[in-house]
Image (cartoon, rainbow, N blue to C red; front, side, top):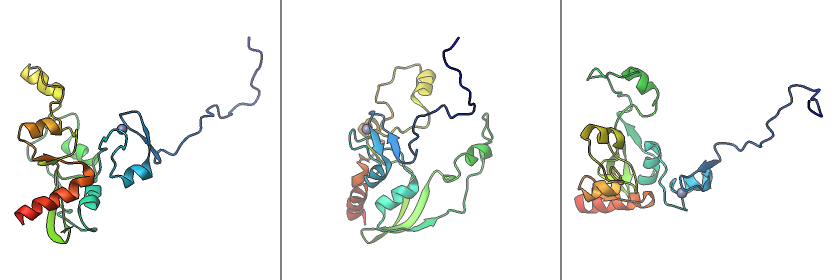
Amino acid sequence: MSWFTRKKQNIEKNTKKDLPNDLWRKCSCGEILYNPELEASFSICHHCNFHFPITSEQYQDIILDKKSESLFSDISSIDMLGFKANKSYEEILETVPNNKEAVDCFLGEIEKRKVVLCIMNVTIAEPKALIGFAGQRVIKQTTSQELPDHFQTSEFLKEKGFIDFVVDRKNLKNSISKVLDVLA
Ligand SMILES: [Zn+2]
């Protein structure tokens, strides 16, 4: 038998103060980061240099001089291969409403040079980005081979020639501009 009995019901039991979810983010290094500061630093953790995933719109803001024209935004994927899974292809596409294409294209300028920017993370990658069609576990099961710990990281794929260069997000625009110096 308890010493005290609650007479009043429906009292809020959770006294924990809720912090607005959009203000704070926890990094995999354990640090709690203030979102406005994180966004101002290209969504890179200033403790461990982890690059948080960002949208192609945010890449556009980082790379291009100013807001640009989005190309082919009225085109969306169709199920050409008769995709078989627990969910239909259309259902899966509905879960990623802002990213219906594998490539997002923008017409804009990099340091006053006219460019068409196509964002798909293939030849330029960020530090420790994971790149692959299938996950490491699936590949390990399929091939029955041990895989290195850093398999599928941008650094490993650069070493194997699949990635041209690995660049910190804050240096992305400058690096692309240098490539344009050579090519354009
Ligand atoms: Zn971190």
